[in-house]
Amino acid sequence: MSPTPDRWEAERLLRRLPLWHAPAPEAMWTAIRAELDAPRAPAGVPLIRRTVPSWLAAAVLLLAVVGGSLAGALRSLRAPSHWAAQALAGSPAVDGAALAQTGNLAAGEWLVTDSVSRARLTAGRIGTVEVGPNSRVRLDRRFTEHRLTLEQGSLHAVISAPPRLFVVETPSARATDLGCAYVLDVDSTGSSRLRVTMGWVELKGGGFVSLVPAGLMAEVEIGGRPGTPYPPAFPPAARDALHRLDDGTATQADLQEVFDALNVPPRAVTLRKTAGITLWHLLQRVGPVPRAWVYSRLAQLSPPPDGVTREGILALDRPMLERWRADLNPMWSEEAQGWWTRLGRRLWELVIR
Amino acid sequence: MGTRLVAEPELGPDILEGCRRGDPVAQRQVFERYRDRVFSIARHFLRGDEAAAKDVTQEVFVKVFRAAPSFRADARLSTWLYRIAANACIDELRRRRRVVLFGDIPPAIHGAVATSDPAGPGDLGSEVSTAVEQLSPKLRMVVLLRHFDDLSYEEIARVLGCSAGTVASRLNRAHAVLARALAHLAPNRPPAESTDVADA
Image (cartoon, rainbow over all chains, first blue to last red; front, side):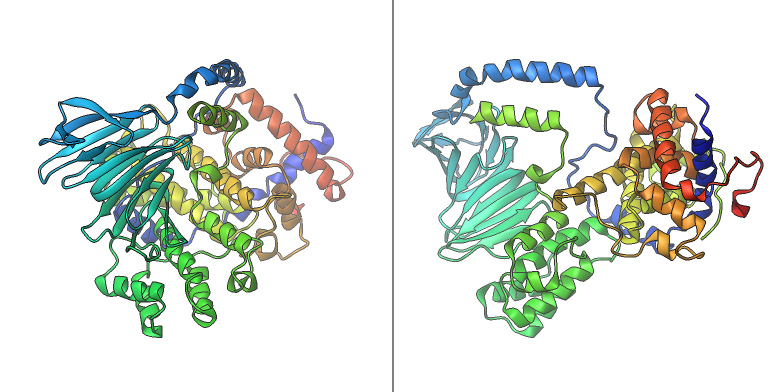
């Protein structure tokens, strides 16, 4: 099809575009090398988006609708009265009886491992939980949730269910899955330590909440509130300073200690945004004067998105805080998706719930 | 600024093999070859947001180098790289839209192409650039790939994962929109094909 004269003119004007090729900053190479050399975060996004033909999308939609009609029958899958249990090492016990190679953990029963035992729990399509040595885990049945109690020891959860369907209670906190994989440890005092390797986990205790994304960890003691999430590589001095900031006993030097520990290369985008989550929590845990310093530091790491103002953040405006948090590191449920993806996930939630 | 990037031959198989092995020297050569193109596309696609364009460019090369071992030898590196760049730009736009509930993304907050070009605001280049930035994302990406980087319809189709007919259709629509937006710049008659646009 030959262009009409006016369109031809538009094409002619567009030929000017190559004249405005802008040179990419030379410093970018250093930043790329730094990011390539840095420890790699778990990959969650395909490198190449596969385009779905419209006929395939229609077929998937039809299947999804038909599948949705079966949702009622599949609802029996939700919150089963028992989980499959498998011994991985040693001699785990279920309710006092040695676990054979495979078995079940029923609601209300305890799975106990000694110093050389490990076990795996599997709940249908929800995911798997590996229970480490010296652990005590109980299955608690809830109407809409899959809930475990970790009294002591450790577990590694890999969850594929929609957010908030899988919960682990510990003596000091409640870890709610927001679409993720994580390791949760409980020591002999009941203190919990959470390290997230994929997605997000909400850590709640003492009426307070920490949101921990992949690449960060957080701790909470019995009766305390969840600490500010921090990178595992944080130096001990910075961890101590962060604890004092959480406790409200910090000095300006403590804040500087944390700032120094978060001194990531300016062009290391992923690291920068992960570090930003630490500062995002601190914004809400320090007084008005240090909050302004934290704001400045966070804005340096990752400028606030449109619609988020300094005044709003310093006033702890909740929508603005959430907007900035989503800009730093969006959650699974916040990812922009095609309508067929959203529909499919909605049906999946119906099935699970 | 202001350098026209002419089409260059594909990098040699030794460079690609070096990238697969993670050789920094080979990676640097790929970066040098494509960095300005990727950055420019991102900068225009993101409406002049230079900081976001830098982030996107960096993200693209990190992804390319990390995934290089899985790159198929029968594919063109440039097509693959442009595809990752296009996806990264679109992802960035979607990420912004999560927080901008109404309307499209706002004009650049870290500096705008239209006002930072040497000719200054109001000149022909700025007006064309601004008009391109007002196109919908799908049309904008096709225009940038076609007119920034001289990709053929078939190459653009491979980059975007659609048919060449779709590319042609989108370009046609984009030109129609641009023709309306730039009507006041058009002379009374079409100039000859050989006219240097810099003199227009």
